[in-house]
Length: 124
Image 1 (cartoon, rainbow, N blue to C red):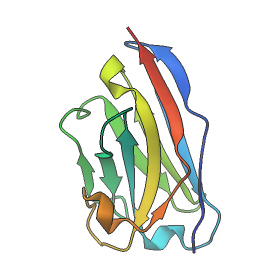
Image 2: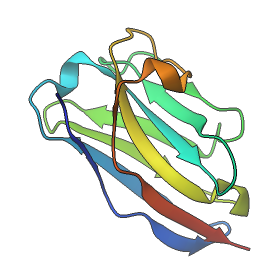
Image 3: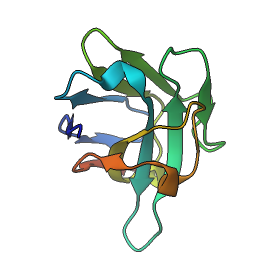
């Protein structure tokens, strides 16, 4: 089973940028659709972005469209999330996740492998 290791998050001011990475320690990374989810304190986990295994199809939550970009490097077994123009509402713990679904699912219960989570804090 894959183990997903996320990079350290960070703290930025509103309008700033951060890039998250997620590395799969197994050699099966390229076989799976990958996604990013986040969870703010006291709220449910929510979908952020997802990308299919060949980087053909991507999905984004409406709240991050035009600001966040998901990408992947299958050779490096790494998933990326570039976050620009960050807002305080983007604050939360960010998780990368893996799903056997072929399409970039927005549904958290379709993902069966999760990273440990990394904190992103955006101050106003």
